[in-house]
Length: 247
Image (cartoon, rainbow, N blue to C red; front, top):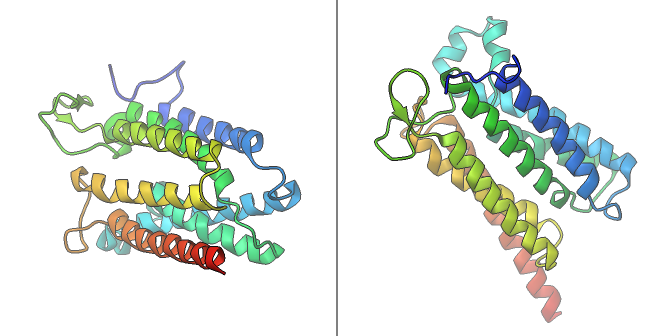
C-alpha cells in the first residue's frame, strides 16, 4: 500500500474527516433522546460544542511545542494547520456547558454524544492511517507484528488503528450499558471521556511527539486534567446517589 492512499483521487484525510463530521451528525440526529432536550435547544448545544472544539483543538496544538509556536506566532499557516482530538473534546465540553448556561438548560446532554463521537472519531482515524507520515499520528518504530511501514522503510506502531479498535470496544460496552439503563443521566459520556483520556495518556508514550512538560507532552498534560475532573465528577454523582437512597 502506498501512503497517502488516495480514494477515487481524493486525499484520505480530507475524505474521511468530512465523512466523520457528516456521519457523526447523522448518528446524533438518529440516536439522540428526543425527550431529553428539544431540537431547538439541542442545536444551540451543538453550536457550543462545535465552537468550543475548534478553539480547544487549536489551543492544545499550540502547546505541543511552545518554543516553535512562539517562533511562528505571526505565521498564520502554522497557527491554523494543526489540531488535536483531546483539545477538541475538552474544548467542546466547555462550549457545551457555556451554551447550556446561555439557554438555561440544566439536564445532562452528554449521553447523546457518545455514539456519534465514537463513530466520528473511528472514521477520522481511518483517514489518519491512510494519510501515513504526513498526518503525524503514527507511533514510534517497533518490531511488533502490528508494525506498519508508512513508506520510508521503518515499521511503526499504527496508533491510529489501536485507537480505532479501542473506541469500538468502548462504544460497544457503553451501548450495552445504555440498553440495560445502568447508571445515572450523563454517566455514559463521563465514562467515555474518562476511558478515552486514560487511553490517550498511555498511548502518547509511544508517539514521537515533543515531551516538553517533564516526561509528558501537551496531550498527556491535558488528559491528566480531564481524568482528574471526570474522576471527581463521577465520585460526586455516586455520593449524591447514595444520599438519595438513604434519604
